[in-house]
Length: 141
Image (tube, rainbow, N blue to C red; front, side, top):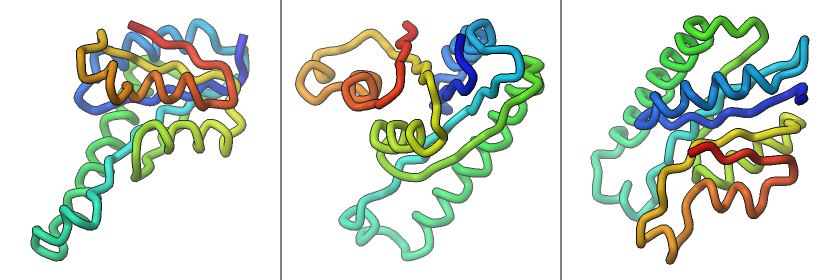
């Protein structure tokens, strides 16, 4: 079993995130902690140059607030006694891997969609997490 499980959840994949969350509960040691992680993608500088100056920051902040509220509600809905929410900004795979190391996680459970043609050329977030994460990774389909 595991004492600190990190569950990255994308806001557009909440249903799958709930399934992964239940799996995390079943693998958690008594007294262990589940950390729900959402990564808000940052807009690159090139894209920001074409937008109104404050718009990207407002968009990112709104996404952070929405994710925090949504994931906090999931913790309550699934009755997880020891859990917390972390919201980070950046590229998903890199942030997940860095956070797993920073938080001293011993398992990352990540949802993965069925790969399409594009995933074979550039790779999915889940495959990059599996390839580079320093702790155990469980991919849930």
